[in-house]
Length: 109
Image 1 (tube, helix red, strand yellow):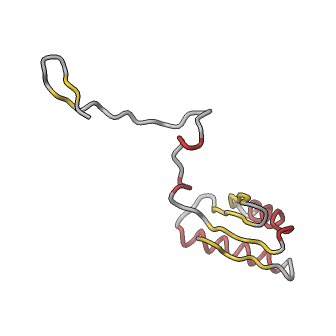
Image 2: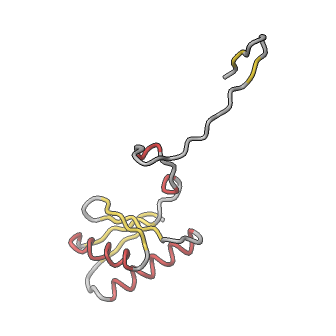
Image 3: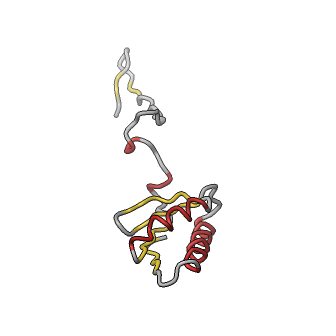
């Protein structure tokens, strides 16, 4: 958008950088989550979802509930996407050794 300054000269107005502030709506806060979805998991039976959620959180992961049987997991202090996936898969495998008859499907990531 071009505006005219006094004297008839044209100039481009400066763009203002918007930083997130406390109380902003989540849509206004830039986040790594908009381009990186972490690892999405589906737990069967769904009743064990919260148990896996707590196990991942105790293993230095950020774990979020999605629906009745899904979890989205992110590694805190992330180094790379590949390492994040390996860490989360290792945590899930360790959790599955304690729970027989449980299926954990990786949906994304």
